[in-house]
Image (cartoon, rainbow, N blue to C red; front, side, top):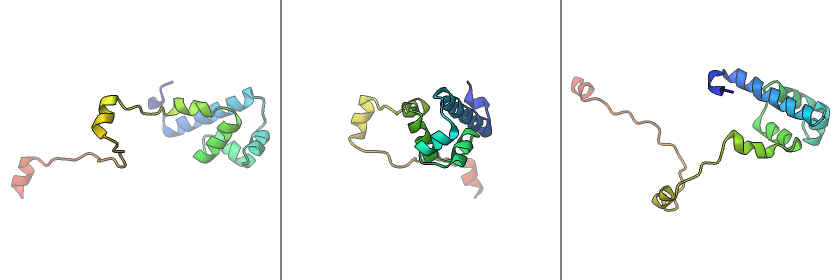
Length: 110
């Protein structure tokens, strides 16, 4: 599936449908999942509709025994040995953002 060609709402709906599918494969009702995850029935319904919070998603995935799938969602970034040696223990805490260089023509106009 090409998620880049989908809208955000489309992706939310797809993820919600996959959660519902997983729940049904485990033969669980929404109420059973809600009770096991200590969430409300409305929270489960919202997740399956493509809405909800990450904390709710994690609780539901835990109850559906699908937490290991989070590695596939966003894989851990591995650093090459050369990059690790270059950093020498430094851990990046911020993004630098894109820096825009002004052209010489703009400077000349001032």
